[in-house]
Amino acid sequence: TLAIHAAQPPDASTGAVIPALHLATTYAQEAVGQHKGFDYSRTGNPTRSVLEATLATLEGATRGFCFASGMAAEDAVLRGLRPGDNLLIPNDAYGGTWRLIARVYGEIGVSATPVDLTRSDAVASQWKPSTKLVWVESPSNPLLQIADIGA
Image (cartoon, rainbow, N blue to C red; front, side, top):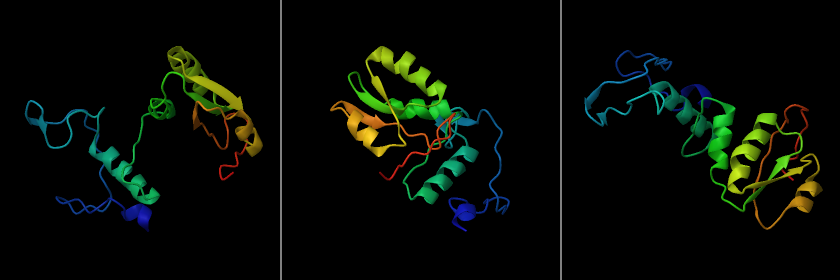
């Protein structure tokens, strides 16, 4: 299937059909700043590259991105917001999400409006000209409510 073959050619040196798990933290460099694609595992490693390429293929995307935590992924998405922007957020969103938005993004002037995402009319009624993002968690955490994403 696509999931087991996407972005995963057999290993050129061993013929292995399953991508190797690369546990290295650092990689040899030919000279300062000259490496073979990887220098430090925090910025990338072969295992993560295969995972990202596979997920991108499965989603029909150009690129895929993986993060060490859900909060790191959330922060990457929210970085596109600017002072004065508003986002609609589920009224039962994960507590860590609320704290990130209030303590980090609230401090730079991003506002958040809680909304019941199980009601599509609630999104329309809370929409503001400054709304740039609708944050969706479905099922929500902790109440496991289902948002009608298609609406």
